[in-house]
Length: 100
Image (cartoon, rainbow, N blue to C red; front, side):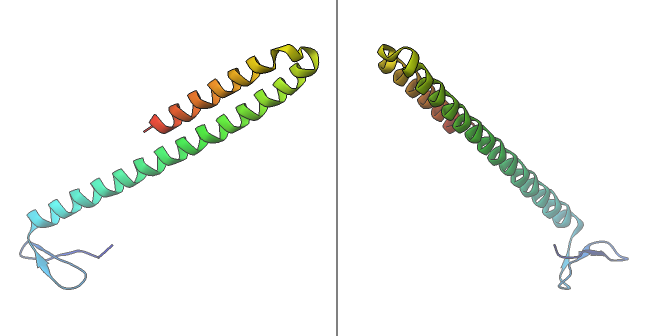
């Protein structure tokens, strides 16, 4: 960020030596703070989406493992196990895609 210096007679001088009014300096500061806030929010959203994705992947793996065990116990339920896992996967993928 450029360094700002307030002069004795009002106004602000930027690090490059350009003189700007206090109003422009305030507006610039507000815009910079807004950009910083949007950046932080975008990062938090991305982190949350990654966490949800990781969790969904773990859940799918767990469900597949359970389905494999169920195939040994009740093989006739195979098509239902697959439908259930697919439904969960599609639902989780849609929820992650909608997350914002």
